[in-house]
Length: 262
Length: 373
Ligand SMILES: Cc1ncc(C[n+]2csc(CCOP(=O)(O)OP(=O)(O)O)c2C)c(N)n1
Image (cartoon, rainbow over all chains, first blue to last red; front, side, top):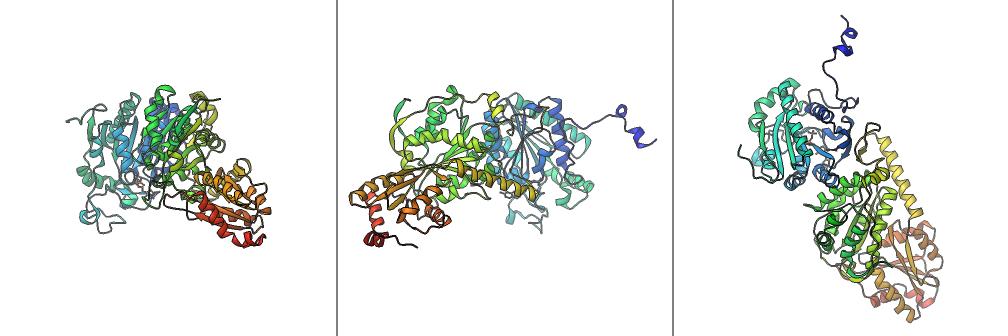
């Protein structure tokens, strides 16, 4: 059987979402950004909210997110996406507004904006890609870089005395009363992608139900920045990132309530 | 006649915003302009017109909220004073780069650094020459009265939308804090969502429908040739502003031999200086730029034909003087241009200005002929 005999509409079991464009992604093979983009696009399509959605793109590798997900977008300055989202969401309460941010973007230069947007309980979804490194600018240390991890600005490994400690930003966010749903996910295998998709779906639904901020961290790989093959990067993430950044829900409540006990 | 009231400059900015159908205000407190947000919060416009008012966590955040809301096609504004505007520089550059309309108010105070809370005009360069990174310009309006504080809010939005460009009201602590009679504008309704779609929907994030391409609000362009084309388009737009929307006022310039050039608070002082000088027999007039960008080059060129000299009177070390000199130079004239200024929050006295004029142009005054550079 030839390929053309296989690729036929009647054999189709899985398709690209209508909310994804045909633009070829610029991400490195094995990068998590593409997978998370796909999940978000699928959900926007499944929930039928394409006409209501405004995405806020970050600075970092996902700066071109607007080339791939077929909704209206605003590109924000480095770290300022939560403030930009606040402006859009406050004046357009019928819209679904989400930010898409890396760890350099959200946890470093934008740490002020994210804390305050979450604390105000802005009615937005935040998707936070934590690959522990600055991907776009060539693999420098991020606030989330693990202790001992080698990056281009910590060539002898991160040293807490010299470089400070790795920051668990999602744990901090979970303390803020404006958030209703805070969770940590991954997309390194099929099961985790499905879980992550459920989490993002819940986040979107919370925003549609005006429950305040939903915050979804996705612990991710950066093969290029970590200088590993995709397979080795996934393994390294499981062995090193997950123990420090454990997966699972940190908070599932309603806005304004104290931090849940579970 | 509209409603008459006695009001503070800063309060009027707030009232005018509500009345002109502004959709949102995002700001952060700083003296001498905090009354803008205080007035808005007390007025609760969300009950009356649906206008949103939010106290942001910083100026960095407030200008980015403005960026987001402006990107969704709405009429939005912020206000601050000098140190806060410095923090907004990043956002203003992004707004100019993404070609979004918005209104930014700078109620200037003395600097540099934390400086003083008294009035100053030392943010002239920052306002008219960019302030943030990259080749961009803002429309800069300089009110000289509480009435103009009122009028320029609507005008600022009108020009901002005409050019899809940030507009700034550059005022200072004196006009922000002074009380004067003001005739308020009548209420204009805010644009409905449908109106936003017709007015801004071609480029704003109003929600992608299946029959059009997604709208992307961005200043990013990786292709240098395209980025240069963008820059050329911006420069064309700034040229058009110079052609179509340059504003100024001339007081007793017809027969004037010496022209005081001043804007805002210092122009009010100079009105008195003109009277004092005229009483002394000196033929002095006042050119008051109302738009600082676009700068009234043509008026300067015309006046340079006859005038023996220009005196730039500024509450700064001399910033606008460079634009006056440039205008004189570009027109191939070499009329002498001098500067007199006070700094650190001090407003010059009218007599002081006349003394400075007499001193700097003593040669021309004694011999009655024009001396060139
Ligand atoms: C004000 C400012 N400072 C620095 C930069 C340079 N810069 C671009 S992307 C980036 C890091 C992004 O890292 P992260 O958010 O982790 O995203 P990733 O590329 O890893 O996906 C930096 C520092 C910038 N664009 N703007």
